[in-house]
Image 1 (cartoon, rainbow, N blue to C red):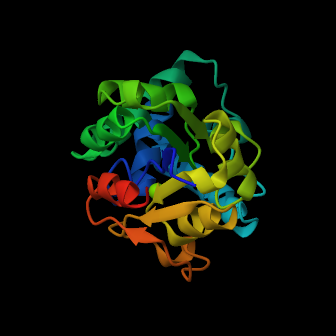
Image 2 (spheres, protein in one colour):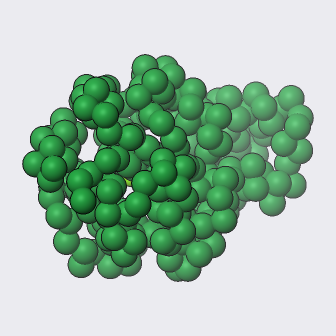
Image 3 (cartoon, rainbow, N blue to C red):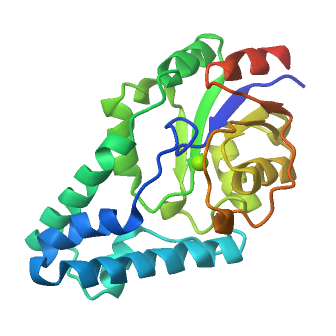
Amino acid sequence: MGVRGVIFDWGGTLTPWHDIDLVAQWYAYSEVYDPENAASLARRLKDREDARWREQRDSAGAITAGALDQIFIDEGIDITGARHLRALGNYLDFWAPHTYADPDAKDVLAALKHRGYAVGVLSNTMWTSAHHTEVFQRDDLDDYIDAAVYTSEIPVAKPHADAFLEILAALSLRPEEAVYVGDRLWDDIHGAQQVGMRTIWIPHSDIPAEQVPDDSASPEAIAHRLLDVFDIVESWQ
Ligand SMILES: [Mg+2]
């Protein structure tokens, strides 16, 4: 059975890993939403986010971190208000420099599409699909992506099998016809292997130890740069 499709993780895979100061991202929100109490609000939002990612990890993706809006709702913030929307804009501006695609991303996606592979994205994220689509449009990648699944909008997250089955269904692929490319050994490599996909690991992310419950998965291949994914996939034909 040949390979018919390639599915990519987003952060640390299509976009290079960046070390983000997670309090600073929330300070960017808080300094607009409530300047006088920005530091304490930022700390509370960070704690809420941490708790949500922890719950997702501890449940192996059976419970997702959810959508970003839920953090604000839990904090009692009116997510339809103008003050919130201005603050959210500042949060997204903080993130923008960290979301640019890997310099190889367009070339590898275009090469795969040109050869007739289906191309998908499966990302563990709290952001909306609309925001991720804007990021891909900015970087001129959206034309090369046939389907994307964001765990902010489904009931499960990687490494849960159903997250992988969701993107496979969206691309009309069987697991053995698909390759998963990711930077996390547990969420990505173990997760995709358990449903029967072949895997390629991008080994450059500096993932905090507490986010790695198990690093024993062994990928079928390692791509030291994103463009190598094309040759690896072709070698499996
Ligand atoms: Mg990643």
